[in-house]
Image 1 (cartoon, rainbow over the protein chains, first blue to last red):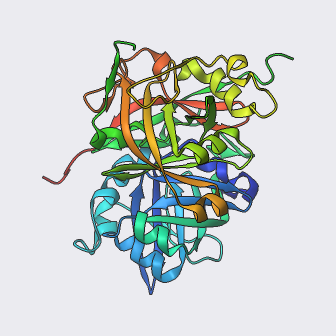
Image 2 (image 1 turned 90 degrees about the horizontal axis):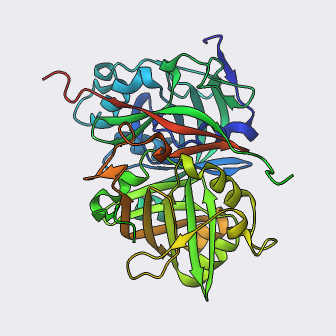
Length: 195
Length: 195
């Protein structure tokens, strides 16, 4: 395991998604790994940390999650822009070698046995909270975060540090087609401006 | 109405939220307007466009939405950073003049009669899709977008144009406390790199 990857306390895990990055979703069942991209992922609760993610019925990754009840949400970086586009537009159903063609390298972390994508800035292991109506009617899945990690070169002590990290670590935010924006400048609101 | 505010076709409305900005949620019932901030808002579907937003039980805005069945999700800008922080930390329950103190100016758009926050870059009018279990168990609300507008100075012809617009138009992405990031550099993935 990369020495820079450190556990994130669960009470800080929401911060990994709070700024709305596009994420990669990975899952494993019966020896099959898969990875997809999702722009529609969002924090849902602080403690225990939960999140939502929208998974289209056509995706193989969704099938793996429904079968295994587990998945990983991870935050790709500017360096993984093309990889994110590839895993977001290719399907393992028609391309069994999707992961190789897309340039995905996987590693394992902790004792979950789940597939983690190399080069991301943060990883959240989730247990599916079954809500069949949401899944069927809206393609909406709820996960409870059971463990989280981040690369200390860009997230440390509970804080993103995009402003000091190499620009290759910035999160990416998808709009449509191949068009993304990287996260930008840090901004600080005045706390209690009247005091 | 500001001449720069133009209707966004419903099939492009998801793009207003796809990059994960922190939003303002406004609602009106029985002559009472309110506005809150929400980092946990996310697109849910393309056609008809739907979105999710997490609304804590303590918020007055949630009460207005439950009573009226309508709300507006709008995208604040760097210029509205402090306003976003104020409406996200003050409550109308304890401060009846919350909107004035926070510097919120409202206007009406279209025939909805709903409160729109002046200075945002985009506005999505939503009809609440009642899902009592989600609302009660997860504070999770689903809206169907029935109309959308954007300021053409930063969103035009279905595309954000942060790279050419004044930097004050950038969306803001909340992490925690008073800490935000503005959206940054545009990035383009190669389409069909093998062809």
